Every structure is written in structure tokens, then in C-alpha cells.
Image (tube, rainbow, N blue to C red):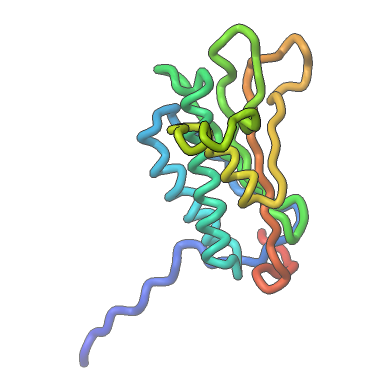
Length: 178
């Protein structure tokens, strides 16, 4: 009698997407070296979504990486005790919502992330930075930013940069995940 190893089943079997689906939030130290973990964890979470196109998964991971790097680079998340939170959900059966929450602005006057539209073509050619949000703007269905707490006296406590991606009917089906 020969013993043949059985193929190992994936830890999580992919399940259909549905409105209201949420993945567990993940918290990372605010160091650029953590970007690889952000990408790896996001890939693992996206694997749990049945029928997700690999190209769209790569696009979502790329945008998350850019959002994470911006959060670390431009907020208190990049300081010694800083952190970044990644959220992932489906507000509808065909929409994937990705968010990165930072620890708030470093300078006294809070500003929200924005694309530097005032650059000339030559300045864009020579720029070493500033293309991350432009990339997200091009790849996501919608994106934006907002303060984590929407009260004026809480300004500067944190910012969420979010992006939404549309899943085609071929890449997701309605169903329930329990």
C-alpha cells in the first residue's frame, strides 16, 4: 500500500461577494518597511473573494501600497510610535472599498491629501514624488479623503484615504459569507 499525500485545501475557500461584506481591519506600524506586509495581507484577503480578476487584484494592491506609503510619509503615522490601519469592505455586491487611515497630520495646520495639479508638464517630468494619488485617481472608480472624525475640534486627528473599485458581473456573484 502506498501512501499518497492529499492535496492541501486552501485555508480560506473563496466565497461570493455581497453588499455589506467586511474583512477584518489590519493595523501596521508606520514604517515604509511594512508596505510588503500590507500588500501580502491584502492579497490574502482578496483571495477570499470568489471570482476576483487577478489584474484587478493587482490594481487594488498597488493602490493600497501607494496609500500606505503616503500615510507613512505625510502624517504622524511615520513617527516612531505611528501606525496605519487598512480597511476593506463591499458597500454593494459590485463595489470594493479600500481605506487607509493614518494618525493625523504632522504640521499644525491640517490639510487633506490632494493631487498637485499646479505642476507644469516639465515639473511633472522632473518630479521625483507626487504621482501616487495621480495613480490612484487613474486606477480607482472613485477615491477621496476625509477626516477620521468629522468634528471641527478634532481636525488633525487622522485622515482616511479611500478608493473604490467596480467588480464586473463576471468577477463576483451575489451570495452570503458567514
